Each structure stands twice: as C-alpha cells, then as structure tokens.
Length: 160
Image 1 (tube, helix red, strand yellow):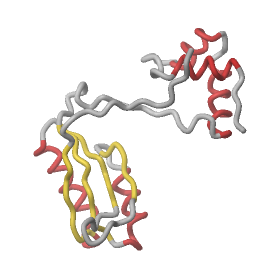
Image 2: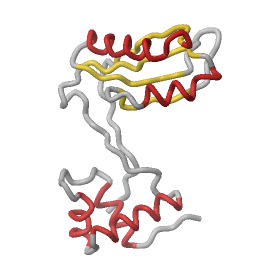
Image 3: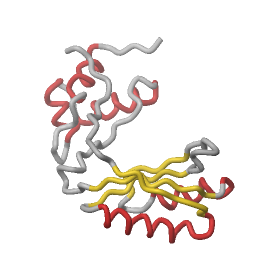
C-alpha cells in the first residue's frame, strides 16, 4: 500500500491546481509549506519513484495561446518502423504529444498519433504535410481529427 505523510499531502494540495507561474516554482511551493526548493524537488522525485505521483507536466490551454486549430494527426505506418518514426515525429517542435496505439482493423488502420497545433486549420494541415514528408514511404495513409471543443484537464484532487 502506498501512503503519504502530511508533508507530501501538503505538497500535493499546494500543486494540484498547478505550479506557480514563476522562474522557481518549486521554491514558491516550498515557501507555502515550509520546505526548501531542494526538499520539494526531492519529495516529488520520491513520490514519482514510488508511483504516488505519476508525472508533473505542463497542460497548456492552446486556445489562450492563440492556437485555435488543434489536430490529432493519425498515421498508418509500417509496424516495424513505427517506434523509430514516432520518435522523429515526437521531436518536432510543433507536436505536443506523440504515441503509438494498436490498429482497430478494418475501420481504423492508424497506429501513430501526433497532436499538432496552429492558429488555423490550414497551418495544421501544413504541419501534417511536414510529418508526411518525414515519414516518407513508410506512411500508407493519414487523416487529421480537429478538436471541436476544450476538455477540462485535471489530475487528482485531494481534499485540503
């Protein structure tokens, strides 16, 4: 059983709505709970190692950043090349996340997914063409699924 002490609980509660927008966010969190920046980082690292906290990551609101067109590009690539190609696609500066998923044949032939963002649908389509160029002949088909609304993204919430 994974348990947390009162200090870990205070850290989770202090950060569950997000880290402070600051050059030293862990120092600001530490000030609120009576820890140094180093202690905050060490405690979060320990919680991640134990599986109590899965990850700490950025969850941007793309619309507030002016990226009003968000498209999940989907690709049918050769399975034996998918991991290598996925790493290349995931390294592109306009791809926020990229992953492999099993196909659902016959209706869904795609196994590589990459989220691309832009100010317009045309900009996202242009980025998809860049991905297609990168994939080359290993790509057998593709599509773009554009977002139609923002979904609220939240993680675990503890009662304070």
